[in-house]
Image 1 (spheres, rainbow, N blue to C red):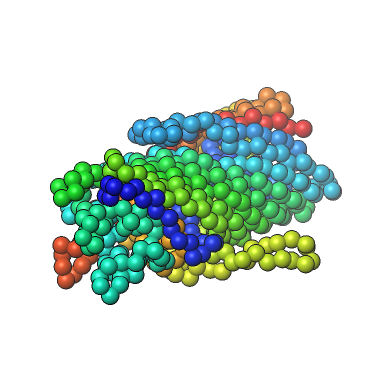
Image 2 (cartoon, rainbow, N blue to C red):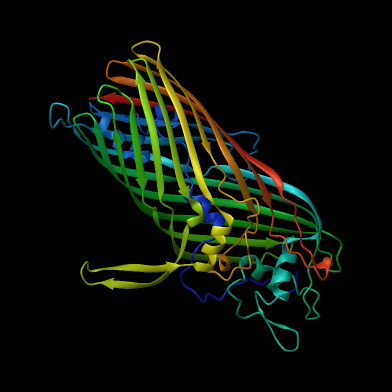
Amino acid sequence: MKRNIIITAALILGLPMAAQETYENANIATKDLNGTARYVGMGGAMDALGADLSTISSNPAGMGLFRHSQANISFGIISQQDAKDFANGNKTNASFDQAGFVYTNRTGRNSFLNLSFNYHKSRNFDYILSASDKLSNASQNKLSYQKLRNGMTYKQKSDGSFDLKTPYISCNVLDALYTENLLFAAGDGKAYYYAAEDYTLNRAQKGYIGEYDFNISGNIRDRVYLGLTIGLHDVNYKHYGEYHENLTSNAEGIKGLLTEDNREITGTGVNIKAGVIFRPIETSPFRIGLAISTPTWYSLSTSNYTIMTDGFAKPKISESYDFKLNTPWTVGMSLGHTVGNYLALGAAYEYAGYNKLDSRINDSETYDYWTDSYYTSSHSDERMNRHTENTLKGVSTLKLGMEYKATKDLALRLGYNYVSPMYRNDGFKDGTIESPGTYYGSTTDYTNWKSTNRITCGIGYRLGKVSMDLAYQYSTTEGETTPFMSYTDHDNPMEDNIANAVKTDNKRHQILFTLGYQF
């Protein structure tokens, strides 16, 4: 690393607005099993049973089964198993998860028109990631070196030197830091890489996506239930990460490199959800539910502050930009049945094609004469979207649950929730894509998560108009984390830059309490 002059690297921004990268988009687009304790305790399998505030987002028609006005508030604790506190990340955190109400209005002998509002935390980002492994003739800076030598980051002049004034679109934050501060450290004008013996990666994620749902619902002769929900999303995401490599012996005497990365993503989104529940047999409580949700249309801003150091120099880059993200359509089907007044059974299936995530590049603002306001148009980032289609896949969610009333006022619940893998086994974070999502990237690591299994249980007690519900959820997801994309040179194996994937997991315990009042 250059010792005489500490360079503060600055990307020359050719694009004032940008799109995002596949793995960070996927992190924003997914959702957790969360809501009221009754809903969570039954594994979320209430889409056809209805009469719970959490169905406002999974099947809006479920709100049409309410016969009395009601208000709920939910909060609890989430703890990550086998994790160690890192930086500002704690493995155990308190959480405010839900608050809402439904107002019922009788319009006929067996008909109601209900108005509802509900807030719930659809995504809890709290997570600590730790990974480490050996490296053999490989390193993060070697990846930047290979991109440089292959003409992907900076222009090479006829004399073999490089023009470091204007980076290409596939040059990211780390490429700029390494190129301007390390790869030419020998002082002879030639680029060199520095192999590492091993690496350690630690990252703390914090934040949430809050969903505010407004619903209108009703029923026709107690046979058909209809609902429509407009959802507003509030995104608050932060992460702090440290990536450290111990380098092999080199002429410059650099023993190790540490990169520190801070990133924040904020913004809002909106979607529309519609649902129907019907009883095909008039004399039977068995019912079928259907639901559909539009994409969530996100308008987001992201900023990062990245530092690289070898113990002496501390070059840094800070960037920010705006982008848009459209999640896929979601469709669901559900079944519900009750036996007398003591047993309720539910099952639901949901599908979302996450390989169709639409990363979008913002254009310039346009004035709308009709509304006397400005809006920002956008267009799809075709290159990044192709990468998304080859990295992610459609996701199926299966929800099963039951509730047994031991007495008139005491209910016991069990549930199971399964989410199929979103990531393809051969998926990777491609830092060579000519996309603004690459240009503003500040990390190279990625995790291909596998399926998620959730086991839930709960208990509920009613005392007059007051209800108290408690739920427990155990969630487990295994994955494979890689520090940077691999590069293979078939003509010269010494140029290979390969890092093995290491096993990681996300095991979480949640205790959730809901207090309700019927009026």
